[in-house]
Length: 164
Image (cartoon, rainbow, N blue to C red):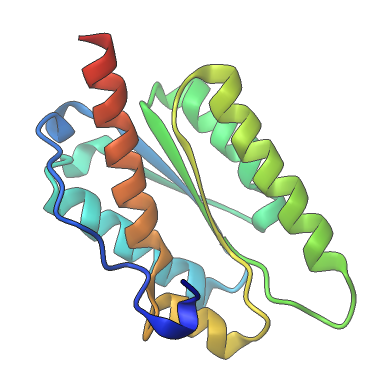
């Protein structure tokens, strides 16, 4: 279903009984910070509401979306976290620059998950204009940061279950 038809952050009830044990990093792009900081705030709020301890949420800023994969890798390596959420916003411009950035970042984030066996969650929104970005950062279509936090917790619970 397209975002035109619903709030994408609405999700089924879920349980994260081991959330207090999880340590989660969030890499946030400073570019389009009015949007990315709203995504960050949604993710942090959701993690806390579901039992992640504030001291176990590490937030670091990076210049732009292109820097997110390297920052995510460093956070995983140096902060000893269970998962990393990468949040950014690349708004379509007059050229195809956004396509190259979005493709490179999404592929790199996916590869980090596959290489490490840890959840690296892609939270880069790719709107056509600023209003669409607002709509996905706490506006009428929800907050992608919330969605990423929920996905992270679900993946960590699945990993915990499979390892037990």
